Image (cartoon, rainbow, N blue to C red):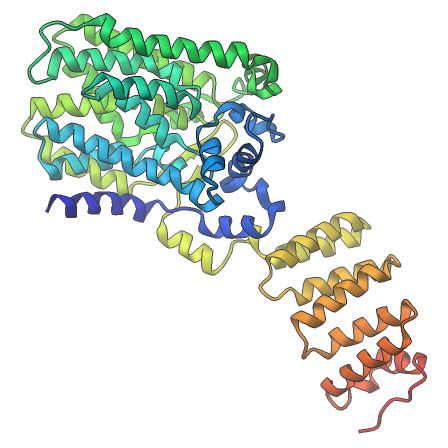
Length: 491
């Protein structure tokens, strides 16, 4: 029964928040579409996998130059892009499983633990990991939760080794995670620790964190791209013009209904006022650093996830009468209320499974070939032939049957006297639509322009066989037949 409930918990989140299948399919076929929000980070991650440690050309994502854990892992294991990007959803499932495990060890019922996992999971770290490619926020959250709540010390040490190479902001949140570990060990662990061994618990994690900072900001600084240095990254942020309402929205959307547990962590710690004040101060400090150093305002809230799980532990330990009702309301609200990923310059809504299936069957304009064909026509009207050709090239790669964009690009090249390239396009049009007489007619014209009269005659003969009876009487066809020295056939 517990595995059924666990599967339902995970399935609910996966059901409501689904990967960008349509965008991934389009980008995998057309690398030129790497500028789409859903896949733009993914393009940089694949570059990291091919050239670990190289500066990232995309300055928006230049900061990820040394976030090498998964690119290097993908390179060593020869993972396909699909398998590499699938590691982020895998991390999401591990986080949910870890949350349930921690609560179950506190004798929390499985349905209640599953609802708490849904509440804590329906947050920005989960959305980014599942809805965009190349975002491994789930593994950063997993590392922080392991530091705060792992029963043994060696998993904490391992997390301090690998998690900073997922995201350097792990270093910012480690103090909060260690504080939650201290509070958990001394306040609610069973039995409570008679003595907290500060050196044993904190010395190794602190040493490993400091060692990473030394390597990242010291040894690697000379090889870092502009946006992978502290000064360069902060200099590229434009947060001063962000309205305060956007910041508040980012804070809310970062954790959404998980804020219930964060607030509960401070309130229920209040009997030991000094510890409660320290926890509240640390939460505010980490939030401030996160908001001040990230364009993605909502994603920065993932750094305080240890406080959220700690609050859930305290709430279940207190077991107020109203808890079952609040859990159900919060779990339902987490799944049903609209969610967004909030950035300093835009707000991106989170779409559900049905939206993604619809986009997969009927692609949005951004990944429709007709969209690029129309842009090409507009570019040709402006005389911007280079832009028109680029747009038609994208349309060719996106189209299921690219005969029409091949025709448009062939005509564009022919108008510029590039008959060799035009013939290549018309030949491709013939291969895509061999029963279309127009395709053979266009190739015949390009062949004659290149001096290949026999080839042009052969292509024209094929066109006449496929065309309707009155097709040869069309003025342009009749003129071309005269150029070939052939009378118009009478049918």
